[in-house]
Image (tube, rainbow, N blue to C red):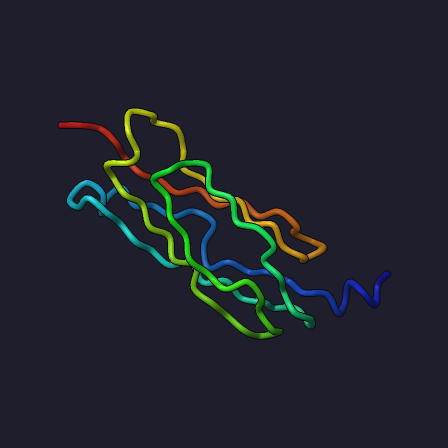
Length: 113
């Protein structure tokens, strides 16, 4: 209903694309934080975080109250990227009715000089 939508949680990310190529060109590990904010009116639940590559590690909170923010720390370990040049992605499953699935892309450059 319209009332449920008006009072629903709403997820907001500081960025949906993280570029770690400059850091990974010089270091073996790169970390970057994505800020997750609940801009809605009821608790936001992050039900599941899926990572599609062994080089990516994540840490974050599971529930955000209205107006609350948290950091999603994304770590990419260069040696675990391997020879696969596919995009590193993460998928977030939430209880936000407008964005139940949210994808983020992590850019990295694995070219050897």
